[in-house]
Length: 210
Ligand SMILES: C[S@@+](CC[C@H](N)C(=O)[O-])C[C@H]1O[C@@H](n2cnc3c(N)ncnc32)[C@H](O)[C@@H]1O
Image (cartoon, rainbow, N blue to C red; front, side, top):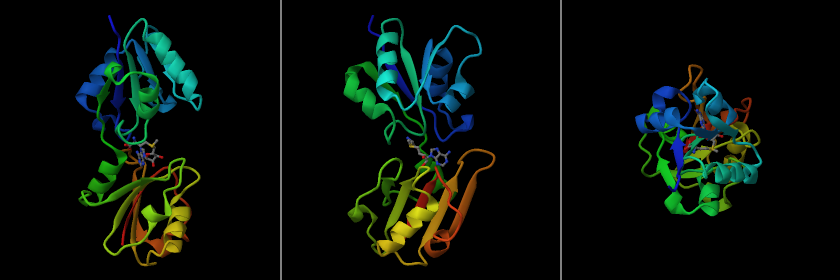
């Protein structure tokens, strides 16, 4: 029997935001792959489950999955939705699409826009997570809405400075959404000028409106 890789989006973090299909796949997994935080949250306490943390050694993780597939399905947990900057890209490069089953998750973008009661059908979504968006993508246009993922290097402060340097007005609205779904969730509403001076917030979602 051909085994499958089940890529389960686990949403922004709190289990309330996990789809029942993903929860079921994770609970029943005989082999579970995920970030260390996700593994400590969802791995079974009993010792009958094979596990592999997702580390920087992505080829090593893919090798583990390839070997584990000989014996069973492998459930891979990724944050948010698998379709937006997750291990899914690397999995598609290594394994045939027919061996993948993707369970969507609630993206951190969705929750950030929801917290602001803001539709996102016209927003442009970018990632500063381990990359820098193009100058064109960051350029200012009146009425433009940008949603951005960030990391530890590209923070609310550095991104606000980038946007000001790209011609965004200092009074433009910025929302800095951190630890979404958790009890210590923070949504800071501010202006670009203020955010460029505030202490940096990292690994969050940033929404700006021109
Ligand atoms: C590798 S990307 C994964 C994005 C994910 N696939 C999604 O749909 O949300 C990780 C980034 O997502 C954002 N993120 C994920 N969970 C978050 C949360 N609970 N609160 C705020 N931002 C979050 C941060 O920008 C983080 O650096």
